[in-house]
Image (cartoon, rainbow, N blue to C red; front, side, top):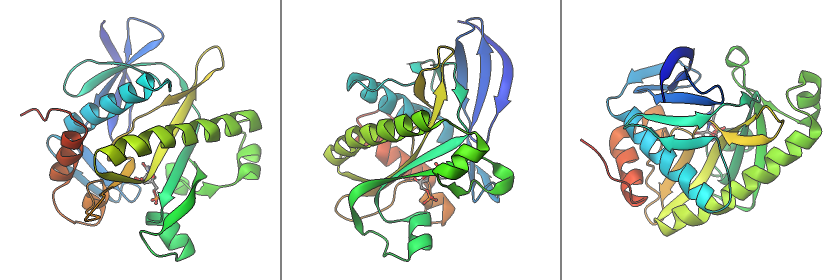
Length: 239
Ligand code: C5P
């Protein structure tokens, strides 16, 4: 497999073409950003931790019958994924109140929801990724109703599997964000990443935060939090 030209550079990852038209080469970066890029830092080792964690989680989902774009881990910071056309929606699943749900509803942080809720945000940096409803998705032509239903069902299935896996590692899966893409044949595939950048993960007993909130709110070392998550998932932290 050959790494070819850079196709896209995002806040946390770079995407490269490969000599296989249906495969992309992803490189996880050390850049940490929050609040739509307002807070920014380079945190050495972050790319490696996210690549390790994301690879482990995508593999675990595949083992549980949930496919994704993940093909294989290539190096400490790189993975091979199948090419999709990314749907411009962020699909957020929540089990426990935190973050923007707390700000939007005033419900106390840490309140467990009786059932998981799913939200859709429009992926647009200039607009600040706003929360949108099904009518907004329709007028934006971001996805057709069948895709919206499919994304919701798939996101809830991912939640079931992730939640029980994290539970067995002593972690609470508070919420997370997924992205989906379409393959050339039109099928919808789980894409992007699943890492502490995109999930809130708390210690089950102490409620200590190990995810990107550590960086967002200056609660300590992001690398220490992510290393703890990797360790609990059974992964090996490299030097
Ligand atoms: O900020 P909010 O509470 O809406 O975030 C919900 C979940 O989605 C969190 O786990 C957060 O890390 C994730 N998220 C993300 N990328 C965004 C917005 C939120 O990964 N652009």
